[in-house]
Length: 102
Image 1 (cartoon, rainbow, N blue to C red):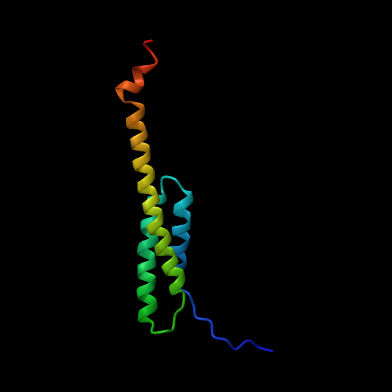
Image 2: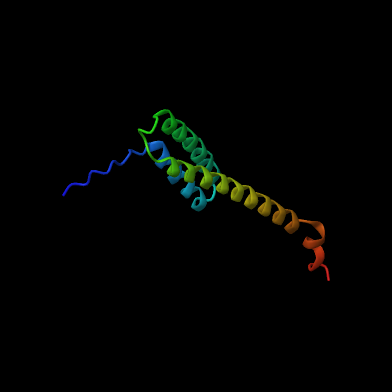
């Protein structure tokens, strides 16, 4: 028995968006760049899907890539802020000399 259900093709940009969005969580310094690529690829894929008029699928995959990219950018900015704040605290004068001269 054959399967007659129509599966729509998913554009490669939608898949690339999701892959970049997921990798952005796990690759420390390239994560920000991958997150931006995930958003760009996802937006272009969704535009391509809408222009196809129902001939292409994968809008959910592209949207997931965009969401992962946005969350990864937020996490990257949080970590940069956290690390800079920690370094500022670590090298502040009271902390540096508090235990050394007693």
